[in-house]
Every structure is written in structure tokens, then in C-alpha cells.
Length: 446
Length: 156
Image 1 (cartoon, chains in turn red, green):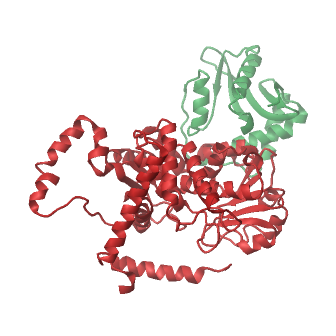
Image 2 (image 1 turned 120 degrees about the vertical axis):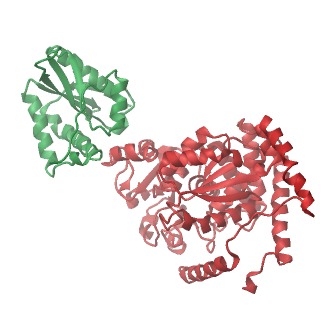
Image 3 (image 1 turned 30 degrees about the vertical axis):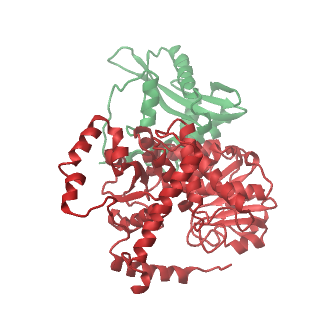
């Protein structure tokens, strides 16, 4: 296990800048219909296309069947919380959103369009996103600051008839739940009585705690800690939270059944698991605190690039299972395992919403996939290389969407699985062929 | 949740009740710079609450659950020289600990104080809170109250 990764990060930064200039971005649109002469445009465009417009004007749902809408997602951001960079603005968020679009395409076969917007007031953002509805089959909110992101997700989910997802919340929560499910299996624990400490109370962890509750974990067994210490109902800043962050306020009331006070160390005393998504370590979680946890402890240290505690330090102090957000350690908890399959399934089932029960199903499917391959302390969650996992997640979402009554396309789990496999592999083939034909240049030529 | 009893403030409640009013005042300070609290806030609040035990025109009720003070309300009787009714009950402070909110306790505190002050001749109730406190606005309108006077201010 390696304890530094910074030289690698610097190399990636240099290459990213070099390639950004050379490739002029990362994604583009290409046609999916044959064009052999300008005559073809009489069908693809005017006058022929008017007939398609007329059909759709009579029944707007046909836009899902006669245009690319069935497979398109808007990646919307106001650029206020881009990666760990903070508020860099919408233009500077574009390379990140393009990268997201690339993952959508490569792993989920989804046509995802980056839309960084130059509005920041929450009601304005709501208006903009709602106005996008006719063009897309789904909305992926990205890199929007907390607590604004909670409000936007809540309001947009209520008001739109296409699924709205905030990946920093739901994607991370889904991946964390999947990892935890298998970590509990390996250490012989039950979901309902596992004592979990959640370090950091940002968008990801608030969503994770909510999802854990939907999955059957008992909120009273969960203790959340933020920069002011353990969250509890009598904390001095409760009224401020009620006003500015009611989502965190509600969890302060519902979690921490023992009413513990103090900081991370006090919270970890006797805990079974820690899920940290807070600030970069090491040293945010100390080895001596891990020693005071229950035997066979589970540590998820998800801060990037430096986890809250290095995996080897956690293990030396008695942790049995350690997960991080990094690909160079075992057990990478990564939202990219979740969102491509989730949207593949959501688009194929044409769901109006992706609710928490569906996300729990997706997480359980992720966990099941790893279990079938053989889980161990080094493998509690699939890796990004195992592409078969994405159609499985898609099928779980499609199937649960049908069960929840949110799907406009009703198929069996097997049908969703086959369709997802077909679409994802076809898209990967297109990319491979384009590379093979040098329509996409190899990086070795640069 | 343990049973909550509403009763008059006693000397031994002063510390807990002070803590609640301090929380309220600090929360007010988030709504407008003209509500920034003083550095000796705690002492001032303690003195202010103590006065309610002495004065007949000032009353404090507390909500007690399992031996702990979980909520309070304070009201003053104000003479209205020119209008009917002549005596007004003005609620100056009300606070309920987060865990006891959404249980109807705020409403019970208001109603209990109304009962008490009605016997002292009060024919109406008013309440003051920072304009920007939308949660307070929602609570009082739900109790059938409406905005009857506006206070505008600036630093001079």
C-alpha cells in the first residue's frame, strides 16, 4: 500500500492540460443516421422533419420515441462547488462536466450534455432546470454548493416529470451503501444494529445517512460529526441549522440516540463503522480512536486525494475493512460505479423519478455483484473496470422503477439487463472503432 | 417523549430559562445587524428574567419535561392609552428546545400565557420578532395572528 499519491496527481494534471489543448475538449455530437448526400436532409431536416414535429405536438411523449430525448441527460451546474476547488464559476466547471459526460457515454451509453449555467440564486436555478425539461430524459445536477443542492434536488424532484439526480449526494450515498452492505456481511453485522459514525456533514454524508435510513439502518445508531463536533439536538447552532440547513437539522434530531456530545474521538468510542467524507487527511481520524472502536471495525475514509486516515494506519490499529475514494487502494467507493447504470436504467424505463428505494436497490445490486465474485477485506465493492456491473445496476433501477409505479416503459428485469448491455456495449464499440480508425487520436501521437 | 408540564417560572429555573433566552437572542442576531447581542448577554438575560418574578406586569411560564426546562414564554402587560382594549399582552420571548418542537408545545405556551394574563385584564395579544424570521411569521399566523404594526429602523 502506498501512502503518497501526489507525484501521480501532478503527472495527471500536466497531461490533462496538455490533452485539453490538443483534443479541444472531450466530447462531441456525431450523427446516428446515414448521411450520403444533401438530399438525405430532406428527411432528416426540412421538409420531412415537420411531419415528426406534428406527431410530437399531438403527443409530447412521442419525443421520447422519435428523438434522442430517450437517451439524453443534462449535466447542470452553477460551478459553485467544483470537485475540491470550491466556487470556480460555470466556465471553469466545463472540463469537469465534459469528463462526466464522457463517463456517462462510456460506462452508461448515455448522451449527456454539459450545461454550466450563469445563475446562482436558487429559485432562478430551478426555473432554468425546469425549462430544460422538454429537451432531456433526465437531469444530473453536479457540483452545486450545500445546502442549496438539497433544496434544488427536493424542489426539482417534486416538480419535474423526468428524473432529477444530484450525483454528489445520491451517487456517493449509493456507492457508500453498497460498500457498507458487504463490509457488514464480512464482519458478521446486521444493518439494523450497526453503530456508525459519520464524519463530515456535507452533501454526500447527509444523503448517505438518509439512504442508510431507507435501507433499514437505525438512525439512532448513527452519530454525525461536523466541524463543530457531534451533531445533537441541544447544540448551540441548532437554530441556525433550522433556518439555513433544515436537512442537517432534521438529522441532528433523529440521529445520535445516545445523545453523545464531543468530537470525532468521543463519537468513535465503541462504534462499528466510520464513514468519513470530510476534509483531507491524514490525521483527521487518528489510529488511537480506531483502537477504541468495536473489534472488526470498518473504516471508510473517502476524502480525496488524501483520505482522513491512511489505510495501513487504520489496519494497524485494528480496522478489518478499509475503503477510500482512491483507485490505487482496494475498495474504492466511487460514485462513477453508480450514476452511469442508474441513468441507463432510468432512461430505459423512462421513469419520472429515481426515489430512495430505487437507489437502495441499485446499491444492493452493486453489493450482490461483488458478492458473486467473492468478497473479502480487499474487495467489498466492484471496480470501475468491471463493466458488466453497469447493466446490472441499470436493470435494478429499471425493475424497481416498474415496481414503484414510476416507469413509463414496463419491462422485466432481464429485458432491462439485455437492453442496457446492448446499448452500453454498442457505445463502447463505437468509441473503440473510432480509436481504431484514428478518428479519435491515440494519446501516444500527442 | 416525557410528559411536558407548563408552570410559572421559579428561582431555581433561572439558569435553564436564561440558556433558552440566550439561544433566542443569538438566533435573532442572525436576522439583522441591529440584533447583534451584547458581550454580557447572559447576565442581562438573567436579570431580565429575575425581574419577572418580582414584577406583576411581567410573567414567565416554563415548560418542564422530566425535571428539565425545555421551553419558556415571557409576556409583558402594556397599557394602550388610546385604543380598546386598553391592556395588551405582549409576548417578548418564546423558545422551545429543538427536540420539543412540532409537538404543539409553542401553541400550549402561548395559550397558557393568554389564560394567565386574561385574568389581569388583557384583551389582546401581540408578539414581536425580527421581520426576517419567517419561521416565527409562519407560527404566529398559524395561531390566528396578523401583522398590525411595522417597526422600521436604522443605525444612527
